[in-house]
Image 1 (tube, helix red, strand yellow):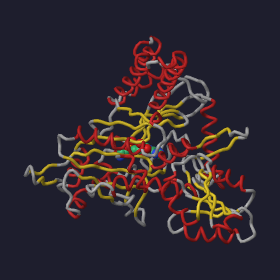
Image 2: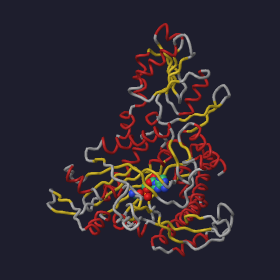
Image 3: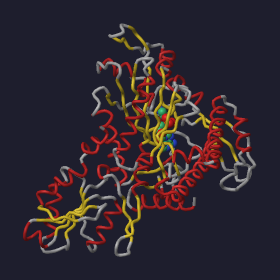
Image 4: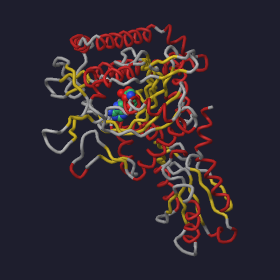
Length: 514
Ligand code: GAP
């Protein structure tokens, strides 16, 4: 645990030191769970957004993208169920006065059991070597079987209690599991209460005429209320999808873990409108498709897993998370939800307007069903950033810190470095920059010895360095150095652009999804 915390602290301080993420309003001591993206962070975030948008909108001829407003008519949130049901179950520790999400306390308890299972597996795999059969071990080792049973039964009971709104049982579960406050170690808990997560605000100049509004807690509703407008104006035929990216706001009570859980964050969501009855098939398809998108970034198959929901949100008939191995363990990165016709039917009911589709093949009108994919952009940022940060021991006994971002997402694709600040080398480097900057984000760096500059670019995540030296003056060649392998090649200047393209081109990366 201490190592995990230590690794996570390194991620946070690296993000600050290299201009990725800053605490919001830091000069006023910051604002809890609100963050600003700095010069490199804004680029990385933009690249992730584009990688998602291309995969969803550009590459699918039956998906279009919109950009709906953050403010929506307040009845939207009554219809969607957020006014009545968008709550977190909270519990306070009477001694430390700290407030927790009751379900998260239980889930953290289960995560510790799962960590024990992983430890047993690692130990056994070391002991048995090549002959180790993980499946068999998980099914037959009594200690592991007991752990798994405990984890499963705990989650099942939590899911059932939450579904039945039985908050007294959630408290009993916390007491039975002997869960202590992580701050004080005390088990002196209050009752569990519900707390609505939406931020309220007002629209209008005077107090009498002002209208109570909410900041949207999800982008999805902007898609639902526009369903018919998009379908008609785009002459869309079912099955089709509407995608959008944008800010969402939630008054998270337990907002820890850096940009994992924020009060203001960005979502990338897609609602896929389908025939009633086909939801199981599309749900499976989108689960598979979204996992492929993640895997195309090459961040390690072992770092992802599906988690099927026991406790379903008020709108869903099936739901799963794609979980990622963050520095603090496996946690939700993306949700895939089969939302039935809940949202469109509710909006029909509350608006009095028909939100139906005439299916020319079936020759009938119906309210479409929806399968949704929903991923937090900031959470994806954290997954990419934390997974990329590593320290490597080098052959000469030194270590280097390197941010091995997938090159397609890196904020700066190449740094151009004149070996010395004289003899015409800076002029050539600037000329190279002038040419490359039309295609890529590139930077010029002439300060310090070239070895130190390489280290700086490694730590900032720049995949390629181009060094201009005295040989360049003679034969027009430069050295290209690759961040991950530290390999160097000598090439003619005219070949530089092609090499960068090969490494960072979105097409090449996204084709890995096929
Ligand atoms: N429209 C469905 C929906 O909003 P959700 O599971 O509440 O579903 C979807 O959120 C995704 O949004 C999550 O998987 C997560 O990546 C991201 N997300 C949710 N709350 C967040 C928060 N407070 N901070 C950062 N990301 C968050």
